Image (cartoon, rainbow over all chains, first blue to last red; front, side, top):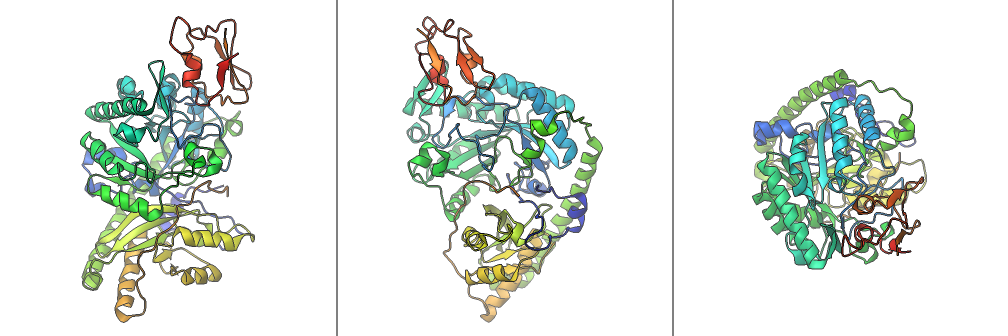
Length: 512
Length: 65
């Protein structure tokens, strides 16, 4: 079982676990804007600060869950195949069991009571929530009664959105995500084979035109009503990668709060049209370059983990199996609001401490290293299981978070999924090779602990494994590392490597 | 004339059920969907094309019986 970070561990930094063979910590994760309290209007910050999918900062502390009450869909996408569900599979559009709204509300209350970090309920499928409006809104209604402090959100393809905006507003759903992959129907025809609209199946360019008009109309209607909108876009190299810059402008001008450009998942074994036809996903650097091009225009989300429609837990981990219908059968659920408030109070303190530590180290870095560093920026990978600290053993990490560090600060730019390297003695060489490829564009990896052998192998790949900052705040540690790196560059002790890229790993998170 | 649902292809997504103008589609005990042939009119008199086949995400699943 993956652990959500405890209050104690959050305050003290916790322990890293002890090497291979012991029970590991959780994979960490993320979804949202990098902006913190100082960068957003206060009313917006209040809305997003505890939402892991809308605030990168919040994703270090808070968890979300999805309930799979919406199986039907009204469009077909070339990156989706509805026939596939494997327990070790992690991607949107896929779930292990369908839930009725009543079962879903009980599950939410049970999870919220067991995991005080859980602040958000999303309905994201496995089809489209608004192609199942009765089930979706009944679920929201029941959850609002049972667990009134949980934020409600939904994620839609947008086709039916204009018909439901007023209902969304009435149910106090204050975060809506729309997946918009194009604003040009000619591009859309390469992504969507058909849509089902007003009792008719439309195909090709006509289908994409209808979808695009409905998406943009729905977005405008939501933002007019003050509902925060995130736009998700799937980056499909050669199909819409260049075009997403135009999408970014179009959604920004209609009031979208956040843009989340995600890499295409197209493993052939998923059986999608793109997967079967050899359409590749982007590399890590291709994705980052596109996100960077769009980041001048609006907030970019880079911490999305593309989770399943029934995911439970911090982004990047999935505890859904603990809360299956079978596991919950016959259990009494006492809703524990106090524990939740206590956790959130601790997070507020931690948040303030982390922020002031970060501001201090930025000042220090500007003073000591800015002259020597010039416009040097390096990528640093970190192993964390939450709380914004470097608190995970290298071998237990299911993913690494990547920060771009310069004299001006440390900025979260993405995450890299990796196989669980420490899995008890077999296949370790291969797994380590996978980790190395996933963070090959990073200068260093900051961890709580690491074994001697992997440290040497990483060194050979040009990646420095560093334990000196165990349990420190991520940004503080990354900047301190950067200061030392600049000094060593000046003395010729290290040589800066450039032009490296990394693979985006696809497929399942391994069960731990 | 009626349509049927090929059980081996059905994912149980339920998209077809509310679209049927004849209430001919029902959920089976294993969570899949089936068409009552006595009620199905292939949507004649209602729509240009059978709605179950139009909305079904899997090709060749809602087909003439």
